[in-house]
Length: 332
Image (tube, rainbow, N blue to C red; front, side):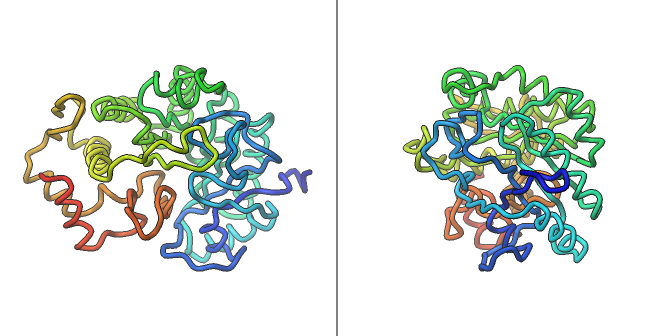
């Protein structure tokens, strides 16, 4: 059912719902982006092995990663979003799309309603869409688009999102959509998600980071999180020290401070980042490489971890003790 062209319902991450005053609760860190998820009765038509929203998953329909996403009136969510943005309490809105027929119409109507009420930056995270559809999204007021590769290699993509798990996705279709998105939205206005811990080697992961940046696509890092009811529920998350190395590599590459070709690997493991060690140590000391990566204004609190840790992506400035712990983990 729709109300005034809008989908009747939309899901909102629990942290965002608290920030908007839709529900009561306390959180360690409030989100600086309001995260929404298109609503569908039932599951997504895709079948990603790590996702509780996948069509064959036994996981909860109100979960994405380890976060609960309750449903609310779309009209009410959008009104509160505009009010909260105008009060200076949030910086961005992000609409994440399940895969189902006519999802693009839902995305456009939600974006148009948001844009009518305020000028908050709008990001959309979605499956590959046609060039024409992406143009319409841009015309609807969407500033950035994200198309998640998730896997760092084509073979892992097939195993976790594509043909091997009965999914609709193809690696080349995702790459095509990312390249077309850059043409429509511009360089640095297109993102992808890469998950550490699906079975890749560090060298493969870093090569894909570089390929994304060379395309004009910003690669945001996630740590694999095992979720009950999914195909990969027994798969282990990555070690924290491995994740730190890849976070640092991502930071250096996205800031133009090194390239994949300047790095050194041993049996697939990253052993040299390229720049002088003292320069790398200074960057580590800022703590910035280890904060949440994503669109501007995205801090995505505890999407991959519990607040008590271990924390993969810090949603806030790191403490001195946290930086010192990371320095020990990296052994540089």
